[in-house]
Image (spheres, one colour):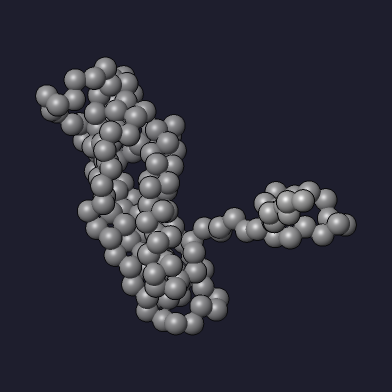
Length: 153
């Protein structure tokens, strides 16, 4: 699967309250449309499919909401494209394709959502890496050790 195009059609962020205690963050991805792209511009071995989506990040209870909607064009093998379009008639998506599709949406939308969350001083919907100082009694962990420039002698 190849991502040929991605664009946002709606970017919305709203902060309703200032109190952040007890906030639960939920993420939802909704696929609203899947269709075949027919164009002379795409002369590839893969078949092109257009997908419309909405990614919503809700801060409950009614604290804030980030909504990102958009479309993307993906190139897939012809057999897979037929399967996808056939299952979409019943509003279903093949599991393997759905996982890859959701990962693309999450990767693209998370960057924009983090920027919006920072602008409105909202809690981030994903945990960012932290740099922590390692004490001598701690075993090496997953965190990134703090480094200081070495003095030249």
